[in-house]
Image 1 (tube, rainbow, N blue to C red):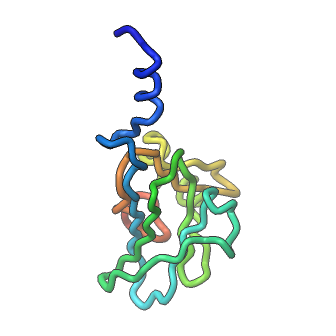
Image 2 (cartoon, helix red, strand yellow; image 1 turned 180 degrees about the horizontal axis):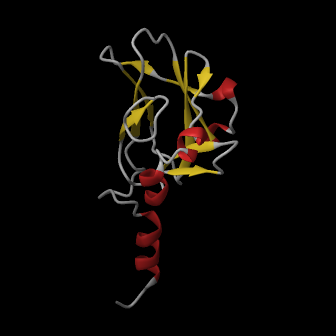
Length: 139
């Protein structure tokens, strides 16, 4: 294909939609313990500032959801904050629970002081997160 100025402009504005509009939003849903009263998403998107964390909505089915619209323009790292307790998963990773997520690139950790979930741009909605667990089963 020969690249022309108009082709380059088209490549720059096309983001997967048919009209060059911003990508649709993305939702992040987490399963939480019964009785949970608040859930936030703590993220590099918000500068790791808890005051700026996104507040999730209760789905009344044991899950809570944050929707970002438009979707993040890059991969993001995040943690859930359930009833003001930050999700600590590096210990789960050290015990081998997070191996599949680490290999998939959806979890980063140093195994002893931090561990963050990763959403890969363009991978769609997140539906399998469980508070306090990497692999879908709470400890």
